[in-house]
Length: 582
Image (tube, rainbow, N blue to C red; front, side, top):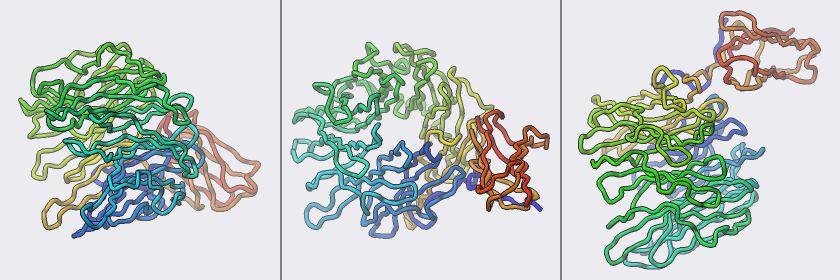
Protein backbone atom coordinates (compact mmCIF):
# COMPACT_ATOMS: atom_id res chain seq x y z
CA UNK A 1 0.00 0.00 0.00
CA UNK A 2 1.33 3.44 -0.97
CA UNK A 3 -0.32 6.64 0.19
CA UNK A 4 0.78 10.09 -1.00
CA UNK A 5 0.13 13.46 0.57
CA UNK A 6 0.91 16.27 -1.87
CA UNK A 7 1.91 19.68 -0.62
CA UNK A 8 0.63 22.72 -2.46
CA UNK A 9 3.81 23.51 -4.39
CA UNK A 10 4.00 21.41 -7.54
CA UNK A 11 6.65 20.73 -10.15
CA UNK A 12 4.37 21.35 -13.15
CA UNK A 13 4.88 24.94 -14.41
CA UNK A 14 1.48 24.83 -16.13
CA UNK A 15 -0.24 24.33 -12.76
CA UNK A 16 1.04 26.99 -10.38
CA UNK A 17 -0.53 27.44 -6.97
CA UNK A 18 -3.64 29.63 -7.06
CA UNK A 19 -3.57 31.84 -3.96
CA UNK A 20 -6.33 34.35 -4.73
CA UNK A 21 -8.99 35.04 -7.31
CA UNK A 22 -11.13 31.92 -7.28
CA UNK A 23 -14.42 33.74 -6.68
CA UNK A 24 -13.63 37.33 -7.57
CA UNK A 25 -13.40 39.46 -10.67
CA UNK A 26 -10.11 41.02 -9.69
CA UNK A 27 -7.27 39.95 -7.41
CA UNK A 28 -3.88 41.60 -7.15
CA UNK A 29 -1.38 41.85 -4.33
CA UNK A 30 2.07 41.83 -2.84
CA UNK A 31 3.97 39.18 -0.85
CA UNK A 32 6.68 39.29 1.78
CA UNK A 33 8.50 36.54 3.69
CA UNK A 34 9.09 36.17 7.42
CA UNK A 35 12.27 34.32 8.35
CA UNK A 36 11.02 33.73 11.88
CA UNK A 37 8.34 31.25 10.80
CA UNK A 38 9.46 30.55 7.17
CA UNK A 39 6.01 31.64 5.98
CA UNK A 40 5.02 34.03 3.22
CA UNK A 41 2.36 36.69 3.74
CA UNK A 42 0.13 37.89 0.92
CA UNK A 43 -1.76 41.18 1.09
CA UNK A 44 -4.20 41.48 -1.79
CA UNK A 45 -7.39 43.21 -2.76
CA UNK A 46 -10.33 41.73 -4.60
CA UNK A 47 -13.14 43.50 -6.38
CA UNK A 48 -16.66 42.59 -7.30
CA UNK A 49 -18.24 43.75 -10.52
CA UNK A 50 -20.42 44.91 -12.28
CA UNK A 51 -21.06 48.48 -11.27
CA UNK A 52 -20.46 49.96 -8.86
CA UNK A 53 -17.16 48.24 -8.15
CA UNK A 54 -16.22 47.69 -4.54
CA UNK A 55 -13.06 46.28 -3.06
CA UNK A 56 -12.06 44.22 -0.04
CA UNK A 57 -8.49 43.99 1.22
CA UNK A 58 -7.40 40.55 2.50
CA UNK A 59 -4.29 39.04 4.02
CA UNK A 60 -3.25 35.40 3.64
CA UNK A 61 -0.53 33.28 5.28
CA UNK A 62 1.23 30.63 3.15
CA UNK A 63 3.44 28.04 4.83
CA UNK A 64 6.68 26.52 3.56
CA UNK A 65 4.79 23.92 1.52
CA UNK A 66 2.48 26.45 -0.12
CA UNK A 67 -0.65 25.79 1.92
CA UNK A 68 -2.99 28.65 2.76
CA UNK A 69 -3.23 28.78 6.56
CA UNK A 70 -6.08 31.28 7.05
CA UNK A 71 -8.88 29.70 5.05
CA UNK A 72 -9.70 30.29 1.41
CA UNK A 73 -9.68 34.11 1.45
CA UNK A 74 -7.59 34.84 4.51
CA UNK A 75 -8.18 37.64 7.00
CA UNK A 76 -10.30 40.64 6.00
CA UNK A 77 -8.08 43.67 6.57
CA UNK A 78 -10.42 46.33 5.19
CA UNK A 79 -13.92 46.31 3.76
CA UNK A 80 -15.34 48.49 0.92
CA UNK A 81 -16.92 50.59 -0.39
CA UNK A 82 -13.70 51.03 -2.35
CA UNK A 83 -10.23 50.10 -1.11
CA UNK A 84 -7.08 50.84 -3.03
CA UNK A 85 -4.28 48.30 -3.06
CA UNK A 86 -1.57 48.68 -0.45
CA UNK A 87 1.86 49.98 -1.39
CA UNK A 88 3.91 48.78 1.56
CA UNK A 89 4.36 45.57 3.55
CA UNK A 90 6.81 44.94 6.38
CA UNK A 91 7.33 42.10 8.83
CA UNK A 92 8.28 42.42 12.49
CA UNK A 93 11.67 40.73 13.08
CA UNK A 94 10.87 39.34 16.53
CA UNK A 95 9.52 36.23 18.19
CA UNK A 96 5.91 37.36 17.79
CA UNK A 97 6.12 36.95 14.00
CA UNK A 98 3.61 39.76 13.56
CA UNK A 99 3.08 41.66 10.33
CA UNK A 100 2.58 45.39 9.88
CA UNK A 101 0.32 46.28 6.94
CA UNK A 102 -0.38 49.70 5.46
CA UNK A 103 -2.79 50.67 2.71
CA UNK A 104 -4.60 53.60 1.11
CA UNK A 105 -8.36 53.62 1.23
CA UNK A 106 -10.73 55.80 -0.77
CA UNK A 107 -13.23 57.51 1.47
CA UNK A 108 -16.37 58.72 -0.34
CA UNK A 109 -18.00 62.03 0.54
CA UNK A 110 -21.13 63.73 -0.77
CA UNK A 111 -20.77 67.07 -2.45
CA UNK A 112 -18.02 68.69 -4.58
CA UNK A 113 -15.26 66.65 -2.92
CA UNK A 114 -16.19 63.14 -4.10
CA UNK A 115 -13.44 61.18 -2.39
CA UNK A 116 -10.02 61.35 -0.77
CA UNK A 117 -7.33 58.79 -0.01
CA UNK A 118 -6.68 57.92 3.62
CA UNK A 119 -3.84 55.75 4.90
CA UNK A 120 -4.36 53.08 7.54
CA UNK A 121 -1.87 50.87 9.36
CA UNK A 122 -2.54 47.67 11.29
CA UNK A 123 -0.64 44.93 13.09
CA UNK A 124 -1.61 41.31 12.44
CA UNK A 125 -0.50 38.35 14.57
CA UNK A 126 0.76 35.04 13.20
CA UNK A 127 -2.70 33.60 13.86
CA UNK A 128 -4.40 36.33 11.81
CA UNK A 129 -5.70 38.56 14.61
CA UNK A 130 -5.78 42.33 13.98
CA UNK A 131 -4.35 44.11 17.02
CA UNK A 132 -5.03 47.75 16.12
CA UNK A 133 -8.75 47.63 15.44
CA UNK A 134 -10.95 46.52 12.58
CA UNK A 135 -9.61 49.12 10.10
CA UNK A 136 -6.37 49.87 11.92
CA UNK A 137 -5.02 53.32 12.77
CA UNK A 138 -5.57 56.21 10.36
CA UNK A 139 -2.14 57.66 9.67
CA UNK A 140 -2.84 60.59 7.36
CA UNK A 141 -4.29 63.94 8.32
CA UNK A 142 -8.03 64.40 8.73
CA UNK A 143 -8.21 67.18 6.12
CA UNK A 144 -10.15 67.16 2.88
CA UNK A 145 -6.99 66.32 0.97
CA UNK A 146 -5.43 62.94 0.22
CA UNK A 147 -2.65 60.87 1.76
CA UNK A 148 -1.09 58.11 -0.30
CA UNK A 149 2.00 56.03 -1.09
CA UNK A 150 2.75 54.44 2.32
CA UNK A 151 6.03 52.59 2.88
CA UNK A 152 6.96 50.72 6.05
CA UNK A 153 10.10 49.95 8.02
CA UNK A 154 10.37 47.67 11.05
CA UNK A 155 12.73 49.45 13.42
CA UNK A 156 15.46 48.00 15.63
CA UNK A 157 13.20 48.24 18.70
CA UNK A 158 10.45 46.18 16.99
CA UNK A 159 8.31 49.22 16.34
CA UNK A 160 7.26 50.53 12.93
CA UNK A 161 8.05 53.67 10.96
CA UNK A 162 5.80 54.73 8.09
CA UNK A 163 6.52 57.30 5.39
CA UNK A 164 3.83 58.72 3.11
CA UNK A 165 2.84 61.64 0.91
CA UNK A 166 0.23 64.12 2.08
CA UNK A 167 -1.33 66.85 -0.06
CA UNK A 168 -0.69 70.33 1.24
CA UNK A 169 -3.45 72.94 1.22
CA UNK A 170 -1.22 75.27 -0.78
CA UNK A 171 -2.55 76.01 -4.28
CA UNK A 172 0.02 76.66 -7.02
CA UNK A 173 -0.15 77.19 -10.81
CA UNK A 174 0.26 73.43 -11.24
CA UNK A 175 -2.19 72.45 -8.49
CA UNK A 176 -1.64 71.18 -4.96
CA UNK A 177 1.85 70.44 -3.74
CA UNK A 178 2.58 67.53 -1.39
CA UNK A 179 4.50 67.00 1.82
CA UNK A 180 6.46 63.93 2.77
CA UNK A 181 5.80 62.80 6.32
CA UNK A 182 7.17 60.18 8.69
CA UNK A 183 5.53 58.70 11.77
CA UNK A 184 6.67 56.04 14.20
CA UNK A 185 4.27 53.80 16.12
CA UNK A 186 5.00 51.63 19.13
CA UNK A 187 4.19 47.92 19.36
CA UNK A 188 0.86 48.86 20.95
CA UNK A 189 -0.03 51.37 18.22
CA UNK A 190 0.82 54.58 20.11
CA UNK A 191 2.34 57.45 18.11
CA UNK A 192 5.99 57.77 19.16
CA UNK A 193 7.10 60.66 16.93
CA UNK A 194 6.32 62.39 13.65
CA UNK A 195 8.24 64.59 11.22
CA UNK A 196 7.57 66.51 8.00
CA UNK A 197 10.50 66.83 5.58
CA UNK A 198 11.16 70.50 4.77
CA UNK A 199 10.41 72.19 1.45
CA UNK A 200 9.55 75.64 0.11
CA UNK A 201 6.72 76.95 -2.07
CA UNK A 202 8.40 75.94 -5.33
CA UNK A 203 9.08 72.29 -4.57
CA UNK A 204 7.51 69.09 -3.38
CA UNK A 205 8.83 65.80 -2.03
CA UNK A 206 7.74 62.29 -3.07
CA UNK A 207 8.65 58.62 -3.27
CA UNK A 208 10.28 57.97 0.09
CA UNK A 209 12.43 54.88 0.77
CA UNK A 210 13.29 53.97 4.38
CA UNK A 211 16.41 51.99 5.36
CA UNK A 212 17.49 50.75 8.79
CA UNK A 213 21.05 51.52 9.92
CA UNK A 214 23.28 50.46 12.78
CA UNK A 215 22.32 51.72 16.20
CA UNK A 216 18.67 51.95 15.22
CA UNK A 217 19.09 55.02 13.00
CA UNK A 218 16.87 55.46 9.93
CA UNK A 219 17.90 56.81 6.54
CA UNK A 220 15.13 58.44 4.52
CA UNK A 221 15.86 58.66 0.77
CA UNK A 222 13.36 60.54 -1.37
CA UNK A 223 12.72 62.49 -4.58
CA UNK A 224 12.85 66.25 -4.36
CA UNK A 225 11.25 68.19 -7.26
CA UNK A 226 11.64 71.91 -7.81
CA UNK A 227 8.93 73.45 -9.96
CA UNK A 228 9.41 76.24 -12.49
CA UNK A 229 5.97 77.85 -12.73
CA UNK A 230 6.82 80.17 -15.63
CA UNK A 231 7.89 77.44 -18.08
CA UNK A 232 6.36 74.38 -16.34
CA UNK A 233 9.66 72.59 -15.78
CA UNK A 234 10.75 70.20 -13.06
CA UNK A 235 14.25 69.77 -11.68
CA UNK A 236 14.52 66.56 -9.70
CA UNK A 237 17.11 65.42 -7.17
CA UNK A 238 17.58 62.63 -4.65
CA UNK A 239 17.72 63.94 -1.09
CA UNK A 240 18.45 62.08 2.15
CA UNK A 241 17.90 62.73 5.85
CA UNK A 242 18.98 60.60 8.78
CA UNK A 243 16.99 60.13 12.00
CA UNK A 244 17.80 58.56 15.33
CA UNK A 245 15.41 56.22 17.13
CA UNK A 246 13.72 59.19 18.80
CA UNK A 247 12.95 60.87 15.45
CA UNK A 248 15.58 63.60 15.71
CA UNK A 249 17.04 64.57 12.31
CA UNK A 250 20.83 64.09 12.39
CA UNK A 251 21.69 66.37 9.46
CA UNK A 252 21.13 70.14 9.83
CA UNK A 253 19.42 70.05 6.42
CA UNK A 254 18.56 67.17 4.03
CA UNK A 255 21.48 66.42 1.69
CA UNK A 256 21.35 66.45 -2.11
CA UNK A 257 23.17 63.30 -3.27
CA UNK A 258 22.13 63.00 -6.93
CA UNK A 259 20.79 65.78 -9.16
CA UNK A 260 18.73 65.17 -12.26
CA UNK A 261 18.40 67.01 -15.53
CA UNK A 262 15.48 69.31 -16.26
CA UNK A 263 12.06 67.94 -17.22
CA UNK A 264 9.37 69.92 -18.99
CA UNK A 265 5.55 69.82 -18.72
CA UNK A 266 5.17 66.69 -16.55
CA UNK A 267 6.80 65.56 -13.29
CA UNK A 268 9.33 62.82 -14.07
CA UNK A 269 8.16 59.31 -13.16
CA UNK A 270 11.68 58.02 -12.62
CA UNK A 271 12.27 54.76 -10.74
CA UNK A 272 14.62 54.89 -7.75
CA UNK A 273 16.12 51.84 -6.00
CA UNK A 274 18.34 51.59 -2.94
CA UNK A 275 20.66 48.75 -1.90
CA UNK A 276 22.71 48.48 1.32
CA UNK A 277 26.48 48.15 0.99
CA UNK A 278 26.55 46.22 4.31
CA UNK A 279 28.70 48.97 5.92
CA UNK A 280 25.92 51.36 6.94
CA UNK A 281 25.97 53.03 3.54
CA UNK A 282 23.86 52.64 0.42
CA UNK A 283 23.92 52.45 -3.35
CA UNK A 284 21.25 54.56 -5.04
CA UNK A 285 20.13 53.74 -8.57
CA UNK A 286 17.91 55.90 -10.75
CA UNK A 287 16.86 55.96 -14.41
CA UNK A 288 16.23 59.24 -16.19
CA UNK A 289 16.87 61.00 -19.45
CA UNK A 290 19.79 63.49 -19.36
CA UNK A 291 18.16 65.85 -21.87
CA UNK A 292 18.46 63.27 -24.67
CA UNK A 293 16.22 60.56 -26.10
CA UNK A 294 18.22 57.98 -24.15
CA UNK A 295 16.94 56.99 -20.70
CA UNK A 296 20.05 56.09 -18.73
CA UNK A 297 20.53 54.33 -15.37
CA UNK A 298 22.88 56.07 -12.93
CA UNK A 299 24.43 54.74 -9.72
CA UNK A 300 25.72 56.71 -6.74
CA UNK A 301 27.07 55.41 -3.42
CA UNK A 302 26.73 57.25 -0.10
CA UNK A 303 28.25 56.51 3.29
CA UNK A 304 26.58 56.57 6.70
CA UNK A 305 26.77 60.39 6.77
CA UNK A 306 25.24 60.66 3.26
CA UNK A 307 28.54 61.78 1.72
CA UNK A 308 28.77 60.73 -1.93
CA UNK A 309 31.53 58.19 -2.65
CA UNK A 310 31.65 58.43 -6.45
CA UNK A 311 32.90 61.76 -7.89
CA UNK A 312 30.06 61.58 -10.41
CA UNK A 313 27.08 59.23 -10.72
CA UNK A 314 28.16 56.17 -12.71
CA UNK A 315 26.38 55.31 -15.95
CA UNK A 316 25.81 51.55 -16.22
CA UNK A 317 26.59 51.74 -19.96
CA UNK A 318 28.15 54.28 -22.26
CA UNK A 319 25.65 56.53 -24.07
CA UNK A 320 24.73 55.23 -27.50
CA UNK A 321 23.07 58.29 -28.98
CA UNK A 322 20.06 56.19 -29.89
CA UNK A 323 16.53 56.04 -28.51
CA UNK A 324 17.17 53.56 -25.70
CA UNK A 325 15.17 52.99 -22.51
CA UNK A 326 16.87 51.47 -19.42
CA UNK A 327 14.02 52.24 -17.02
CA UNK A 328 13.47 48.64 -15.86
CA UNK A 329 16.41 47.69 -13.64
CA UNK A 330 17.32 46.03 -10.36
CA UNK A 331 20.55 45.77 -8.37
CA UNK A 332 22.16 43.67 -5.64
CA UNK A 333 25.30 44.12 -3.54
CA UNK A 334 27.91 41.36 -3.83
CA UNK A 335 29.21 41.10 -0.30
CA UNK A 336 32.43 39.16 -0.92
CA UNK A 337 33.78 41.39 -3.70
CA UNK A 338 32.23 44.68 -2.46
CA UNK A 339 30.79 45.27 -5.92
CA UNK A 340 27.29 46.13 -7.13
CA UNK A 341 25.51 44.01 -9.74
CA UNK A 342 23.02 45.96 -11.88
CA UNK A 343 20.63 44.20 -14.29
CA UNK A 344 18.40 46.08 -16.73
CA UNK A 345 16.20 45.64 -19.78
CA UNK A 346 17.61 47.62 -22.70
CA UNK A 347 14.92 48.60 -25.18
CA UNK A 348 16.06 50.13 -28.45
CA UNK A 349 13.08 51.88 -30.03
CA UNK A 350 15.03 52.76 -33.16
CA UNK A 351 15.48 49.09 -34.07
CA UNK A 352 12.46 47.73 -32.16
CA UNK A 353 14.47 45.24 -30.15
CA UNK A 354 15.53 44.59 -26.58
CA UNK A 355 17.79 42.45 -24.41
CA UNK A 356 18.71 41.99 -20.74
CA UNK A 357 22.13 43.43 -19.86
CA UNK A 358 24.18 43.58 -16.69
CA UNK A 359 27.05 45.59 -15.26
CA UNK A 360 29.23 45.37 -12.17
CA UNK A 361 30.18 48.60 -10.42
CA UNK A 362 33.27 48.57 -8.20
CA UNK A 363 33.30 50.17 -4.75
CA UNK A 364 35.24 53.09 -6.27
CA UNK A 365 32.69 53.69 -9.03
CA UNK A 366 34.28 51.93 -12.02
CA UNK A 367 32.50 49.75 -14.56
CA UNK A 368 34.01 46.25 -14.21
CA UNK A 369 32.62 44.70 -17.38
CA UNK A 370 32.52 46.07 -20.94
CA UNK A 371 31.28 49.67 -21.19
CA UNK A 372 28.24 48.49 -23.14
CA UNK A 373 27.35 45.96 -20.43
CA UNK A 374 27.33 42.18 -20.36
CA UNK A 375 24.56 40.29 -22.19
CA UNK A 376 22.43 38.16 -19.87
CA UNK A 377 19.64 37.43 -22.35
CA UNK A 378 20.03 37.88 -26.10
CA UNK A 379 18.72 40.47 -28.47
CA UNK A 380 15.15 39.85 -29.56
CA UNK A 381 12.60 41.75 -31.59
CA UNK A 382 10.01 43.59 -29.50
CA UNK A 383 7.25 42.35 -31.78
CA UNK A 384 8.22 38.71 -31.23
CA UNK A 385 9.09 38.62 -27.54
CA UNK A 386 9.39 40.94 -24.57
CA UNK A 387 11.38 40.78 -21.34
CA UNK A 388 9.54 42.37 -18.47
CA UNK A 389 9.22 42.58 -14.67
CA UNK A 390 12.81 41.74 -13.80
CA UNK A 391 13.62 41.09 -10.14
CA UNK A 392 17.07 40.29 -8.75
CA UNK A 393 17.36 38.30 -5.49
CA UNK A 394 20.35 37.31 -3.40
CA UNK A 395 21.56 33.73 -3.12
CA UNK A 396 24.18 33.41 -0.41
CA UNK A 397 26.63 36.30 -0.30
CA UNK A 398 27.84 36.53 -3.88
CA UNK A 399 25.31 34.80 -6.15
CA UNK A 400 22.08 36.17 -7.58
CA UNK A 401 18.83 34.81 -9.01
CA UNK A 402 17.09 36.77 -11.76
CA UNK A 403 13.32 36.44 -12.16
CA UNK A 404 11.84 37.71 -15.41
CA UNK A 405 8.91 37.31 -17.78
CA UNK A 406 9.08 36.64 -21.50
CA UNK A 407 6.32 37.20 -23.99
CA UNK A 408 5.77 34.44 -26.53
CA UNK A 409 4.39 35.66 -29.84
CA UNK A 410 1.76 33.03 -30.54
CA UNK A 411 -1.94 33.36 -31.22
CA UNK A 412 -2.57 34.27 -27.58
CA UNK A 413 0.69 36.20 -27.00
CA UNK A 414 1.24 34.30 -23.75
CA UNK A 415 3.67 35.51 -21.11
CA UNK A 416 5.83 32.95 -19.28
CA UNK A 417 7.77 33.30 -16.00
CA UNK A 418 11.41 32.19 -15.78
CA UNK A 419 14.43 32.36 -13.47
CA UNK A 420 18.18 31.86 -13.75
CA UNK A 421 21.06 31.89 -11.28
CA UNK A 422 24.38 33.70 -11.75
CA UNK A 423 27.76 33.69 -10.08
CA UNK A 424 29.73 36.86 -9.30
CA UNK A 425 31.29 36.71 -12.78
CA UNK A 426 27.84 36.97 -14.38
CA UNK A 427 27.95 33.43 -15.76
CA UNK A 428 24.95 31.13 -15.34
CA UNK A 429 25.08 28.43 -12.68
CA UNK A 430 22.15 26.44 -14.06
CA UNK A 431 22.20 24.54 -17.34
CA UNK A 432 19.26 26.55 -18.62
CA UNK A 433 16.67 29.00 -17.29
CA UNK A 434 14.05 27.46 -15.03
CA UNK A 435 10.51 27.63 -16.35
CA UNK A 436 8.42 28.74 -13.37
CA UNK A 437 5.14 29.19 -15.20
CA UNK A 438 3.90 28.47 -18.69
CA UNK A 439 0.27 29.11 -17.93
CA UNK A 440 -1.32 30.51 -21.06
CA UNK A 441 -2.63 34.02 -20.63
CA UNK A 442 -1.63 37.63 -20.23
CA UNK A 443 0.43 37.19 -17.07
CA UNK A 444 2.01 40.24 -15.48
CA UNK A 445 3.71 41.63 -12.39
CA UNK A 446 6.25 38.86 -11.74
CA UNK A 447 8.04 39.38 -8.43
CA UNK A 448 9.65 37.29 -5.72
CA UNK A 449 10.16 37.38 -1.98
CA UNK A 450 13.67 37.11 -0.57
CA UNK A 451 14.81 33.58 0.17
CA UNK A 452 13.24 32.04 3.29
CA UNK A 453 13.11 28.45 4.47
CA UNK A 454 15.54 27.43 1.74
CA UNK A 455 13.37 28.65 -1.14
CA UNK A 456 12.09 31.67 -3.00
CA UNK A 457 8.42 32.23 -3.75
CA UNK A 458 7.75 33.90 -7.10
CA UNK A 459 4.31 35.39 -7.74
CA UNK A 460 2.36 37.01 -10.55
CA UNK A 461 -1.15 37.92 -11.70
CA UNK A 462 -2.90 36.12 -14.54
CA UNK A 463 -5.14 38.41 -16.59
CA UNK A 464 -7.82 35.90 -17.56
CA UNK A 465 -10.18 37.83 -19.83
CA UNK A 466 -10.05 41.27 -21.39
CA UNK A 467 -13.33 41.30 -23.29
CA UNK A 468 -15.53 44.30 -22.63
CA UNK A 469 -18.49 42.18 -21.60
CA UNK A 470 -16.51 40.36 -18.95
CA UNK A 471 -14.41 43.47 -18.23
CA UNK A 472 -11.59 41.61 -16.49
CA UNK A 473 -10.72 38.60 -14.41
CA UNK A 474 -7.46 38.44 -12.51
CA UNK A 475 -6.08 35.53 -10.50
CA UNK A 476 -3.02 35.51 -8.25
CA UNK A 477 -0.54 32.62 -8.63
CA UNK A 478 2.72 31.61 -6.96
CA UNK A 479 5.49 29.08 -7.49
CA UNK A 480 8.42 28.10 -5.27
CA UNK A 481 12.04 27.75 -6.40
CA UNK A 482 14.96 26.03 -4.65
CA UNK A 483 18.63 27.12 -4.83
CA UNK A 484 19.48 24.19 -7.12
CA UNK A 485 16.87 25.28 -9.69
CA UNK A 486 14.13 22.81 -8.82
CA UNK A 487 10.50 23.75 -8.33
CA UNK A 488 7.86 21.86 -6.44
CA UNK A 489 9.34 19.10 -4.23
CA UNK A 490 6.76 19.91 -1.59
CA UNK A 491 5.88 16.21 -1.48
CA UNK A 492 5.89 13.90 1.52
CA UNK A 493 5.39 10.30 0.49
CA UNK A 494 4.40 7.53 2.91
CA UNK A 495 5.25 4.08 1.54
CA UNK A 496 3.99 0.94 3.32
CA UNK A 497 3.30 3.04 6.41
CA UNK A 498 1.34 1.61 9.31
CA UNK A 499 1.42 4.66 11.63
CA UNK A 500 0.41 8.31 11.11
CA UNK A 501 3.44 10.60 11.32
CA UNK A 502 4.37 14.17 10.41
CA UNK A 503 7.84 15.20 9.22
CA UNK A 504 8.71 18.91 9.11
CA UNK A 505 10.07 21.21 7.86
CA UNK A 506 10.41 19.28 4.64
CA UNK A 507 12.52 20.44 2.78
CA UNK A 508 14.90 21.22 5.65
CA UNK A 509 18.23 23.04 5.76
CA UNK A 510 18.92 22.26 9.42
CA UNK A 511 16.89 20.14 11.85
CA UNK A 512 14.09 17.72 11.01
CA UNK A 513 11.25 16.97 13.43
CA UNK A 514 9.36 13.67 13.39
CA UNK A 515 6.01 13.99 15.16
CA UNK A 516 3.85 10.98 16.08
CA UNK A 517 0.15 10.85 16.79
CA UNK A 518 0.72 10.03 20.48
CA UNK A 519 3.70 9.71 22.87
CA UNK A 520 5.71 6.50 22.93
CA UNK A 521 7.13 4.94 26.05
CA UNK A 522 9.61 2.72 24.24
CA UNK A 523 12.31 3.10 21.60
CA UNK A 524 12.16 4.77 18.20
CA UNK A 525 14.71 4.14 15.45
CA UNK A 526 15.29 6.44 12.44
CA UNK A 527 17.39 5.33 9.45
CA UNK A 528 18.35 7.78 6.69
CA UNK A 529 18.80 6.07 3.30
CA UNK A 530 19.70 7.14 -0.20
CA UNK A 531 16.94 7.01 -2.78
CA UNK A 532 18.40 3.64 -3.80
CA UNK A 533 17.90 2.31 -0.27
CA UNK A 534 21.53 2.48 0.94
CA UNK A 535 21.66 3.30 4.72
CA UNK A 536 23.61 6.45 5.61
CA UNK A 537 22.94 7.05 9.29
CA UNK A 538 20.87 5.66 12.16
CA UNK A 539 19.40 7.51 15.15
CA UNK A 540 18.46 5.05 17.86
CA UNK A 541 16.22 6.45 20.57
CA UNK A 542 16.29 3.23 22.63
CA UNK A 543 15.75 5.15 25.84
CA UNK A 544 12.32 6.02 24.52
CA UNK A 545 10.62 9.38 24.22
CA UNK A 546 8.30 8.95 27.18
CA UNK A 547 5.99 11.93 27.64
CA UNK A 548 6.78 13.32 24.20
CA UNK A 549 5.39 12.56 20.76
CA UNK A 550 8.25 14.08 18.73
CA UNK A 551 11.99 13.67 18.14
CA UNK A 552 14.39 15.99 16.29
CA UNK A 553 17.43 15.07 14.22
CA UNK A 554 20.10 17.18 12.53
CA UNK A 555 20.70 17.01 8.78
CA UNK A 556 23.66 19.40 8.74
CA UNK A 557 26.16 16.65 7.83
CA UNK A 558 24.29 15.52 4.70
CA UNK A 559 24.57 17.16 1.26
CA UNK A 560 21.53 18.74 -0.34
CA UNK A 561 19.37 16.16 -2.05
CA UNK A 562 16.58 13.60 -1.77
CA UNK A 563 16.61 10.87 0.90
CA UNK A 564 14.34 8.16 2.32
CA UNK A 565 13.80 8.22 6.08
CA UNK A 566 12.82 4.84 7.54
CA UNK A 567 10.86 5.40 10.76
CA UNK A 568 10.58 2.34 13.03
CA UNK A 569 8.50 2.24 16.23
CA UNK A 570 7.00 -0.53 18.36
CA UNK A 571 3.57 0.45 17.00
CA UNK A 572 4.48 0.41 13.33
CA UNK A 573 6.71 1.99 10.68
CA UNK A 574 6.73 4.53 7.86
CA UNK A 575 8.99 5.46 4.95
CA UNK A 576 9.13 9.19 4.21
CA UNK A 577 10.87 11.05 1.41
CA UNK A 578 12.79 14.05 2.79
CA UNK A 579 14.59 16.90 1.01
CA UNK A 580 17.70 18.51 2.46
CA UNK A 581 18.93 21.99 1.54
CA UNK A 582 22.37 23.33 2.38
